[in-house]
Image (cartoon, rainbow, N blue to C red; front, top):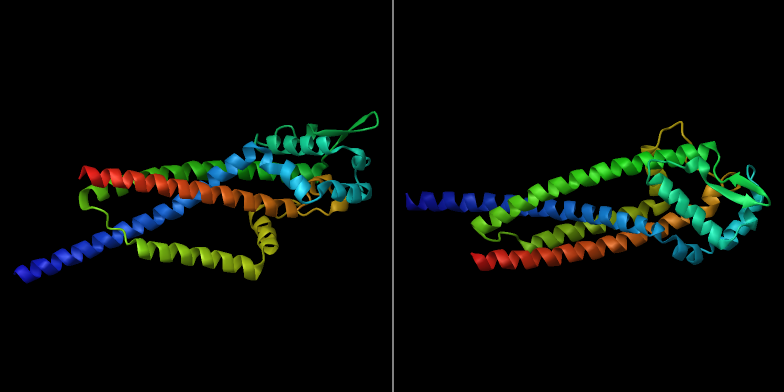
Length: 259
């Protein structure tokens, strides 16, 4: 009888430990997604670091080369570096405000105020604005999921102690990171970038623009700028994720000390 009870207790402990580690794994995943979301918001708050990437990618020379070839707009090659940065910031502010003001963005050429964006570009950036709204909704949803999971995790930890197998969690997270890196290496970041556009944006809306057809693409030196911004967001996310883990371990020690 005692042996049967011991087996049942062991099985119960194994199931509890498995659930504990599964919850911890989902918390890690959700936490990193939230770190990416927060990093994106932080990056957007300072204009995605365009001033830095502008110099890093030699955007001034790029604009001077391709602006004169534009088939829809003229004179953009005569604009200044300060104007380029101001125009990009206006685009950022518009797409983060549901696309408001996109058609009002102009640059000066002689005595004329020329619209920076043509209709297809405005439609695409409006799609981007809608996507940003959806990302905010997703971020709020992830935050609620995280709060529920973490509260449940703390309650379980106070009741049963820390049942996390840190070694296994580290292996799983490392394996996922290596898998993602391998996919990017095999497929290529540019191919993934284009495929995401195909999947996300409406099929009848243009999203690819040649430099000769788009001052928007010329100004952003797409897709190079987006690669830099992606690295920037990832770097900030890793810092935030590490900070969150440090805060969690501090809270975990406090909970354990109270028991």
